[in-house]
Image 1 (cartoon, rainbow, N blue to C red):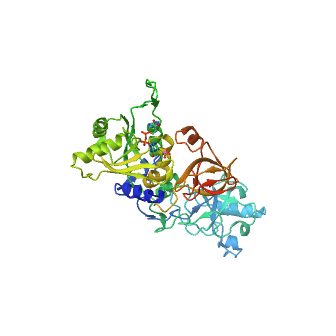
Image 2 (cartoon, rainbow, N blue to C red):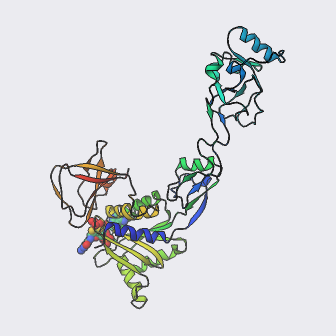
Image 3 (tube, rainbow, N blue to C red):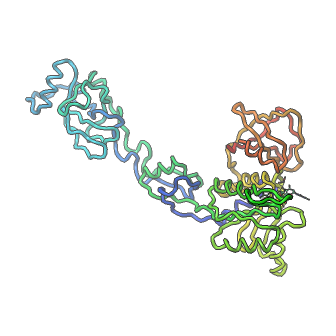
Length: 437
Ligand SMILES: Nc1nc2c(c(=O)[nH]1)N[C@H]1C(S)=C(S)[C@@H](COP(=O)(O)OP(=O)(O)OC[C@H]3O[C@@H](n4cnc5c(N)ncnc54)[C@H](O)[C@@H]3O)O[C@H]1N2
Ligand code: MOO
């Protein structure tokens, strides 16, 4: 029997061989699940220049009007100087104004004993090192010639106050993301803020989803009296898309291998990988087994790269197969709906998201089981149970272990992992839980 970690490695390697990197335009990345293929370094400082954090007035904390140093006696020269002198005579400190600096406009250097009106995001004039918010002035932006302040300039004009320094968010040359990280909206924004228009990502794999079985009909179609509706096609397609796959098509094939070869063949040119559900266990009409056997026979008994059928030490999701079929890389999941979704969670999703097999692909918690009565757990198999994780780190199992109980999976926000060596679980046991919410 193959262990869960061995099989995760197998599927990771299979998927890794199919990966290729591409430069995705950030403008086209929104809403997609993308993983960085390389580290990214910033080509520039962000912010690219010192700028104001407030609507207000840029001044210099070293200006003599702030430090109280006596100005050399000079006659007032501008209307602003005259007003400022007049304001000062009313007791409030005041400064003549330079032209306003709207955000986006390059300012002229600050003159001595002057203030420059600035807006949030305006580039700081050379020589200015702090901003006095408009709320701390008597007359706001009403006057173009001068501004008077509500407190002493010594109080208000502290070096660096309300200034966002160049490079304070991201410094030029800094690594802003690592290979393997998800391109989240925030991270895409960071790249954009540095001036990058593209991101190096793993191209989404083009996956053909194949559900199998004569007993399966499309939801909404006429159902024969021994038939069921196709839950896997819908659920697996969604689960793969949520892990970043691009779905080429979702097919349903019968138990006849000829149908499988014909339908899959039509999509082969556009497909990187097939993920199928069902048809791999011990029955007499397992379509994946039959198709693999037919191919092996056609190639004179050599398995032609063929399919490997495994028994993985996991419940649900014990039967698994992988390899090549119909000329395509192929991952064959078991057909029970919970088994196929758990298999995606444990093997396929981590591989698609390029999470190395030794790392947990979901947030992991330790939690205490709440259980009315002890239950057996299968020997030598990791038991994966649908569960609800509570904020107090207790975990409640949802339904029994049967792999047809898809409703219980839909209600679960966590998977409780009961170790392969555990043969019985009881109330209060500590278990590892993956959050899948
Ligand atoms: N003699 C044995 N029988 C079975 C074994 C075993 O070891 N020996 N393993 C069991 C386990 S565990 C699983 S899991 C299943 C896996 O079987 P297959 O992968 O061959 O899947 P199927 O037989 O095709 O289907 C299993 C089950 O799931 C239903 N199903 C299939 N497709 C869909 C679909 N698209 N939507 C909803 N439900 C689907 C199907 O009707 C079956 O009930 O084998 C056990 N048997
Ligand atoms: O392993 Mo099957 O996947 O239990 O139902």
